[in-house]
Length: 457
Length: 180
Image 1 (cartoon, rainbow over the protein chains, first blue to last red):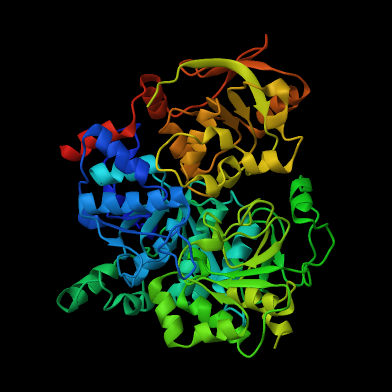
Image 2 (image 1 turned 90 degrees about the horizontal axis):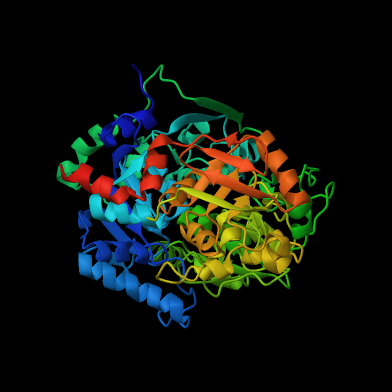
């Protein structure tokens, strides 16, 4: 019987399936960061257990660390203890830690792919919901809680029920200036924040095939924002070209056989899914959120809609139905995060900002996703473009996406952001977030109000 | 994991869809390395922002059952959200649906998460908002009783039910299955 890619990866990883029980599901790889791992290592210690497969795990620092130049001096006592705890735990169990200055410290979902740790057909977990990012390589990758981090540390497996499957087909080619961020935001606005609950999504279609790996990662990253357990894309030549030569990818001798095996990770013709969503993207416009969750998103030319039970959203964002989103004043702009903190995203923002200046009264942070992204940006002179435009080019980390460190949008301020969540207080208590693409964020920073690239050309 | 059998408590109505884990416990409180001290910050953003937020309503003080709507626990995978609810005294959440990761985190910590239909939630929500309402929940019989009304049946995954009644967590199961 023909199987889709999700079913194939599932079948290949079920270790045990007892009737009426969840499957014992093998996890090939795990990524660790400082915020959701300490309690998992504690659990192991309390039970007298060790790490079963340390070679399947890598760790880095991203969530709670500062992003200023003196970042190695962590002023926040709790954050410093958290970082030191991860150093101690990874050293104790022989897990590689990509620490400050290792060339590969950064947001865990930027670092995994750039190291070639993320490979087609594998199962990957991390104590972070945006683990779905790694699905861009044809991996089944999803976020787990700290208890399940402990389960993988101790056994290399977790208990899982078989997911439902959803195919999302993006037809047509993207218009000039429209990005993967706009595509995934449009999907979430269409099916809703719970629209893919219980499902893993496979993204297909010519628009996907034409995308770079960075763009595919942006798509898969936000799968969680429509409630999907994960999102993935079958590997192809673009995937293989990206992986070749990366530190954890198969080396010269094993490369050909690895690629041959990876080519099998595609859906069979005639396979079926529990749900299918089709969307034509050929007339898509830049997308911006107006409310307090990612489904509350509209095109740049649209007005704030009238929705049921929207009182809290209107009150929090200080917007009313019928108002245009365009030209809403902003005071902050953020380019970064596991959604849009990769080199392509920085290039795009730099292209818009080149020769221009951020508007008076706007603070703009550009936070590269990793040390490698930062070095590449410096090599290309992007940092100088950002600095000349009046933006701050900071050190790698999650930063203002979730405001766990000192990078916070002040109360009442409005921020246009390339991150993934516009939840109440997400970027700091009382902050108002508008999600958008790097191009839209850069254009809005120049104007000091929400706008898109075509308005600043 | 602690076991769960039954609870009788007043019900706190949190009349919202899509309550995300940033609302339940904001990121700034996640820098700790242990599992304690999250309860005092539960729903902190909503409490700061709205003096009429249900958590401030003294009528619901001491509630061990939280009643809410669809897609509860969406967003971040932080298990701290479950720890925060439990440490604030919540033993049961009743909602129309949950995010997958939150649901998984709940069952691994002995927090009973019950799903009811939108119609049932609506009826309970109206009652809980109008007056302080005590509900008795029994996992073994999968029933909840509101006052003197007929019991409401709720579905619950048989595997998870057995684990919860025994207080047995996944790790022992996994250790046995993967050592074999």
